[in-house]
Length: 77
Image (tube, rainbow, N blue to C red; front, top):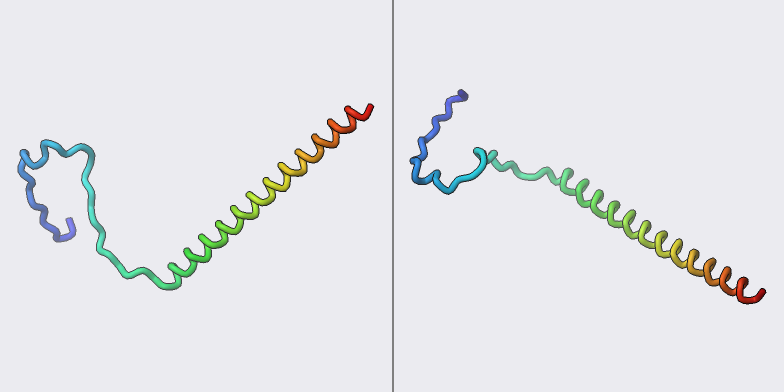
């Protein structure tokens, strides 16, 4: 293949193995710019989520107020 040699694993060691082969890639140091971008993305996603939650809560409050007004108008007749 690419000059790597593979060691044979004894059958008794494989008795409890389920699934396929895994490989471990060499670890490279993370790029600081990439880490910063991921952190900014996470912060943006959190802000968007908070904004959506707030908008949903305001919408719920508006619906509740409208329902109350409709009920009061019905009772007033």
